[in-house]
Image (cartoon, one colour):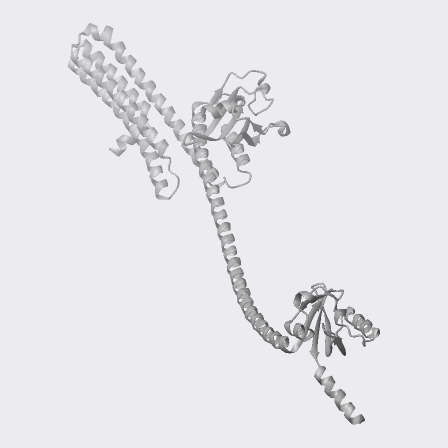
Amino acid sequence: MKKLLAFCEENGYLFLAGNFIGFLGMTYFSLDNDFLPFFISSAMVMLSSLALFLFVKSSRHKYRFLTTQIFALRNGDEVDFQHLHKDVADDVEFMKKELDAIMELLKNMLTEGFDKQDVLENKQMTLSEKIKELTLLYEKEKFENKDKEWVASHLNEFSNLVLDGLDEENFEDALMRKICKTLDLNQGAFYLVKEDHIECKSVYAYGKKKWINTVYGLSEGLLGQCYLEAEPIFMTDVPDDYVNITSGLGEALPRCIVIMPCLHRGKVIALMEFASFRILDNAQMLFLKRLSDQIGGSLAYTKQNLKNRLLLRESQESHEKLKAQEEELRQSYEEVTATHEEILSQKLEIQSISNELTARMKLLDKVMLITESDLYGNITYANQRFLEVTGYQKEECIGKPHNILRHPSNPKSLFEKMWKTIKSGKVFTGQFPNKKKNGETYWVDAMIAPVFDAEDRIIKYINVRYDITEKVKLKDLINNHETL
């Protein structure tokens, strides 16, 4: 059986011609000898043989193609499922039509009845035309299969370039160069569709690249028409002033223009434009159509992959930033916590010092005469002990100069020395008499000190006096007793 199938495929024309000659001989013999049943049998044998031959021829070709796709699937290579499904569906439809035609012819031959004259005059021509039609269909299928094999083999050559070269910098140049050389085209250009324009990425075999426009509107010229309609443009009647047509290929005068959209899910991703001085055949157009679909899918995948990588990189960068910010916040929190603890410690220390100073001030207020004055010696503060000793009320002395306490016996030079000392930022000390409100004399051991602000400027003076009146009286008493 295998040898018969191989013979049928390899010697198709010989097999078909032998059957046809035998059929003609049988027909002539049947009609001459009034043996119509034998004629019908011979016709059935001939037509069955022809159907068998067409079936074997188509089936073996599809078997080889299917086997190639199965091995590709097993090896992890790309499988052209769309091509496989379309070819099988087309062939099944073709076989069905041909078998229906054969069965209809046989039915007519069996049901309409035969007369020698009818067969000679009416049926012979019909049968001959049908055989000729089937032969032409076979030739057409043969050429179509040859074209499909050519397309499939060249698509396989481009698969690695499309899949592996998309990330390369000069991918478009390599693609245009290979397509033009494979199809023997004169010029080619590759365009990418952006959000609001079409951008030329590569041109091939154009002598004046610097004159080529690189940006086109989405509705500009033939490129814009192809983008909007998402359908190929095939022009064979190219005008002589083609240079004025905004197609992107410039001033050449080709006889054939092809603009092919690269689609993905109905959306145009890119455009390919070719010019040639000869018209492209069906196989070349089929090749460009399937290659453009492959490029569109690959570009969409690469674009999405690039977008995913950018999103991943942004996510990683955001994660690193958040991590760095988290570390900064942690360090800041630790610093704030340490500062807070330090402030609490200082606050406690300051509170302790304040309490100690308050206690000391309370003690000093009990035994010392304390006043504060401005830069001119006017009293701004007086403690209770001072008021008790001097006899003044608080409102009587606040705002008054210190000279209300000056005793007539104090020399002027004493106060000049005092002002000179405290204005220079030093502390003045001395013992001298003062005068109370009622005119009585009391002695003090005084210390006067300047107070400075943050810029080291004197802002006021503090006067601390210790009442030594009793001590002075005792000393005078002793001196007087010694004198006596």
